[in-house]
Image 1 (cartoon, one colour):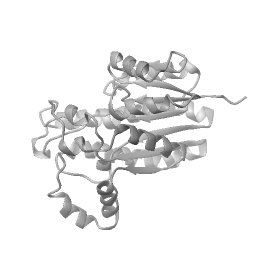
Image 2: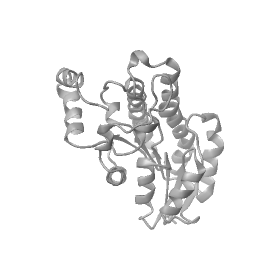
Image 3: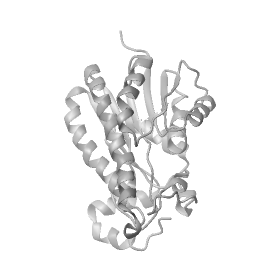
Length: 266
């Protein structure tokens, strides 16, 4: 007999897009949500504000930089309701500094969290998806994963890497009924710029103007859910600027390069 509910696992669920995703998923009566991020107290707050009781919400703390702990966490996620149907890999950190000022340690940290952490979690969940003959990976990348800008070299590299890995995984996983959706948001009004790392590894601790004028996270969350429910492979979420940038990168890359030299990105 088919299950009458689905389980969606959201990383980065304590704030921003992740928090908005939990709020939107809570509106779906047959959806149960696993909330993951580093801070248990914030996850519990989000669960409570979303109106998810223990039958529909499960807090599962996770630090994407500590992949050696993921095996037990994945097992716990599966055991809680007997399955996971969708993994929304939303957790990550950003960067705000010139490449020449960014230490290799910071570059490695961004890659560890944004790329290796997400990949490690996905691949530990893969046997479960394969055994069930279904499952969806929803990878929150960025428009920066399609084209680089100033002050984002390491961040952009980590997001480009996600595209390479998950485009390949999509081709490999298709025969097992597993889908991959890459999400490329542009500027979203979250605190990502507050937590973005400078070249020395310290949080920037301020809101970018472009971020402050970005899309509301609730709108982005709805578009993400629509994208994977409609089996989209890749979706750019943003205004005219982001969509135009993606088109220029594909068809007129040299023109985009000239534009980005002077574009305001903070």
